[in-house]
Amino acid sequence: MWNVIVRAVVLLSIFSAVFLFVQVMLGAAWRQRQKHAAINTRLRMIKEGGDREQIVARLRKNAPSDGERLPPPLGTFYRYLQHQFFAAAVPVGVGYAMLAMAGFSFLVFALLMLAAGAAGFDWTSGVIMLLAVLGLCIGTVLPLLLISIAAQRRRKRVEDQFPLALDVFVRALRSGHPVASAIDLLTHEMEDPMGSEFGVVSDEASYGADLHDALQAMAERWDNPDMRMFVVSLSLQSETGGNLAEILENLADVIRARAALYMKVRALSSEGRLTGWMLTVLPIISLLGMVTVNPGFYMDVAGDPIFIWGFSFLILLYFVGVLVIRRMVDLKV
Image (cartoon, rainbow, N blue to C red):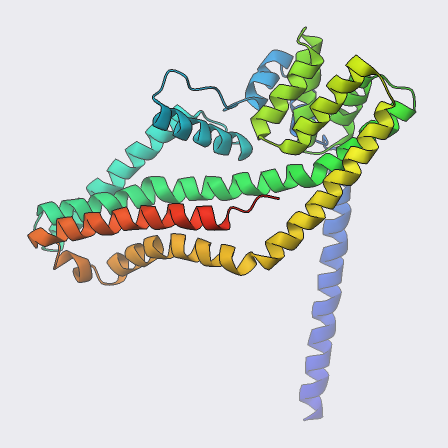
């Protein structure tokens, strides 16, 4: 008995020592890497020798446009996709991405058709419709859902970084820096995404664009009310005068207070938002899972003529439910 205990203690001690050694070495390597690495994407691209105009073009990839050439419903949806792709930092344009998703959906649909034929199911209109919906879910809906999650995370990071950026901006103004120099300081002190965004503003101003227009374009790209208040504060101060540092310091306090209230509202509405997410995602996951585990559950009844009408009605009800849920959990603070 004592031999077993001693052996266990020795093995646990060896494991602990190795674990601590690995953690210390990895921490030292990470700190060394962070010391020599660029603080944001724009500085890293400049360090690699990239051209400033190309860097600005890459960082402004998928910047939302007006979409006037498209009909109102398609234009609204296209601008929504642009906002999502831009916030998620997707390196390709919306058109190319949607074309790739359409091609991938068709490939998945063709593979499912071949698998259904190999399994002995007839290619009836109901089966074709079911497999087309599955291909669309796998090739388009799921990638768009992942892009939406990534965009939400980066927007949350922008909201968290912006008050800190205002603090750095205020300190720079009180140290005697002009507005343009204070913005350039933010490009070297802030991490992504705020550091690169202010870098784009600084580059645009260097190329001859009006500074307020560049800041307004940044606010429109992110559709952020805090940035709009910042631009309005700069515009009013440049026209009427006043202590800009004090104005922006008060603005940072207001933004932090509103963020605290927003977090309280999110905490109180977390159950409803989680329910909304589950009701949105669960039907897609259930459909894919059931077809994977037991294909005959849907395929055996897909040949019935009423299946097309029933399945189409269920899809319509699903989209109506998603819109209603989004309206219910979209709380404005």
